[in-house]
Length: 622
Image 1 (tube, rainbow, N blue to C red):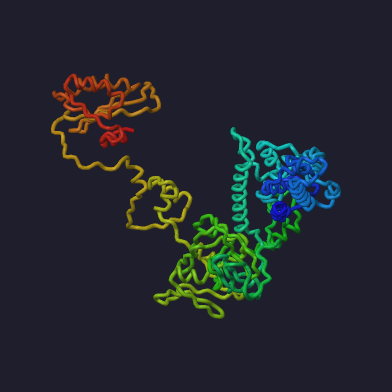
Image 2 (cartoon, rainbow, N blue to C red):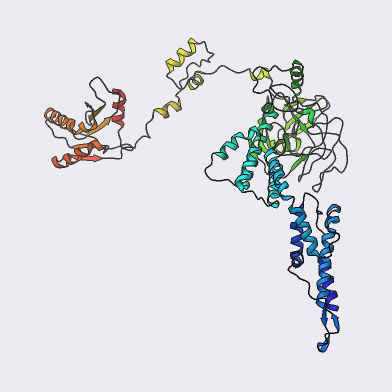
């Protein structure tokens, strides 16, 4: 009996943890998976399936006395285990299901009743789930939420005995995507090999990230972005720390200090909202707030006329966009909501966030650099955090001073940026409504430029000859700065006209005519009246005299060489000593002939052959 009690107590200890969700009308598959796993872990699955059959309740007495029955200890053990499993089932179902199995006395009877009850619902569940798969659309859900929902519907189909193949689930997912995913859908449908749900999910995530980056970039730089005026608030970066300071964006508030373990300030308070619905940009088609142009119902309607009230509202709100940089003594990093302000940027994949004074977190999308051009100097801003939800562009005073070797002096009506070594003033800015924005180049200064030089026009017009540039300038009355007594050489033109690097000086000099003869074939060219497309040239290295023979095809080179040889050898009363060619196919016959008659045939690589004279002659002939 001691063994029986210990066995029962062991089973009881293994079944003390009920399932996380009780059985109801629509969760049979998940509930069953939890119960079966628990029973297998406790080695009690046989009590559900009926494999653990009940032994005899009584046994015959000793010495074969059949008239006396004794209790079977094995039956007591089986009954204790069976009732423990039954108790576990009764405790893991809802009240509606409990009324159906309350009269069952064994675990296998209760289990089979549950299976029978829910198997009759599988057909209806399969029809309803397939309908849900067909009608589910992504809408405002994220890719993760949408794919997760479709996968759960696929699991319900499997639980109903109608499992879906990957291809079927992929078709349902693609059908429910919005129009902005049409390019992705077309790419997937054009594939010859099947795509899995996991691979499709990865591509959709990448596409979603790209769309978000593009929308953030366009909304940050657009003049339709509405930025309500705010006063002070503190920004801190999760994992780096920060404190409330001057120059951010919520009225009359101070942010408290932050620690690295949570997102709540230790002191101070704030009512700031980083990006609420009132800051959404208006649609550029109908000028209503709440959606963008790519989702507007009227974007393809050529006859649509927007409501003048909405047009006026969008026009009056567009002036509130603030692109200035504001100094902030409390920011640990430079922060901007405009991606276009970063001259160099890279994607940020970390988990850090920028937190406002009320603990609201804003994601960091990029980290980059920028340069602020001022009247007297250029200030370098390194490690700028691109936070699309930020409504002000903040310059961390600490980073500005450290990266540019300067220090700042703040006064009631102005502030100064001075060089740390010379103490000279590099920049002076004014206080504007309690904030200290960095002054930038004004429009008057931006257009105060000098006239372009003649060299600049030469580059702009595509490097034509000087007379052509002069003719264009005079014909269109273009502004040009005349610089007298200045001769300039365009390096780009010189490099473009150079066919190759100069060769080293050669000490080889011909002392007699026909001692060395260069030959080259030029063409093809447009067919002439005599149907000639090529010409072959023979240049004497001693006299630099050139003989030219027109060719209809390259195969005539060997014949023209015989004509040239007969002519010059009678003319100079000398034999040709050396021929130099580029070993083109047209000179193959010439090589064997030269070997036969004793003419030395020099051959070089067609690309590297020293043909300076030939190239110069060809240029002059053409």
